[in-house]
Length: 129
Image (tube, rainbow, N blue to C red; front, side, top):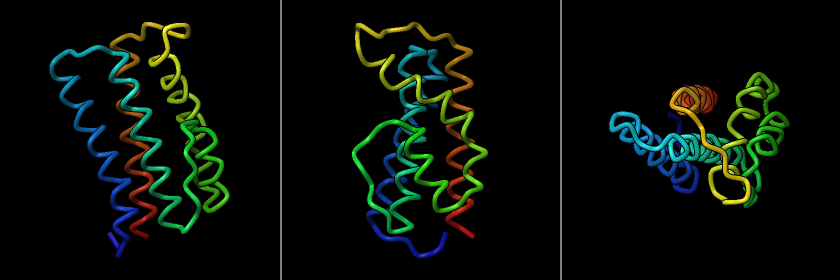
């Protein structure tokens, strides 16, 4: 990884915290909703890290689709992550608030982990190049 600021690196470290949590929860058969939430958080933090790396303002928002649009404005190859962003966006509100609460399945949790891993690897590949 090229030289990156502490601020950028901190975004990626927070994302790694969430990845570690997902891995533990998957291994221990944790609650799927919690796994899905942390997967959404991984994408959010890696997209914010990419924006910070590119000297863009990192807004205090949680919508993955909106963060992705900001990334696409920098590098249009991020557009290929649109379906992933839509998938993960459902896990922020629906896993956090009682009036929107939906029970997600183990399959949803596994897919969320895979999508988050893909986004993480995509972002890190962009930073390396």
